[in-house]
Image (cartoon, rainbow, N blue to C red; front, side):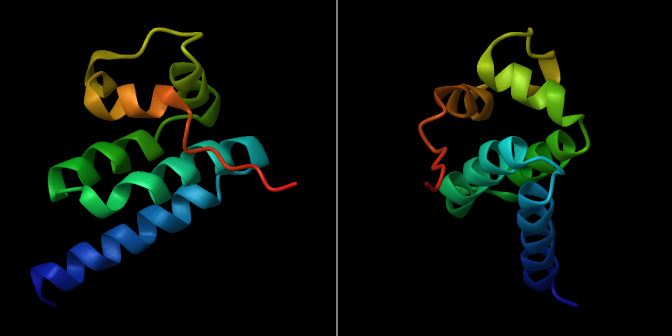
Length: 92
């Protein structure tokens, strides 16, 4: 398997994991973030997101909503984008 195939598979898994969190709210927040930004990500950005996906949804959502302090490992430009919440598109 080539590196690009492996990376493509990792992006596919990340997409699935981001949209199948267990609650609709987390799906929209985390999945919406993935959909909006993943096209510009490097492998390092994907590693950050894969690590974020291992965290509890309530924590990720609290960091995005700025109701809890963001741990150092998740602070930075990606979390800044996540905190904008302008990528959440809730169907009516």
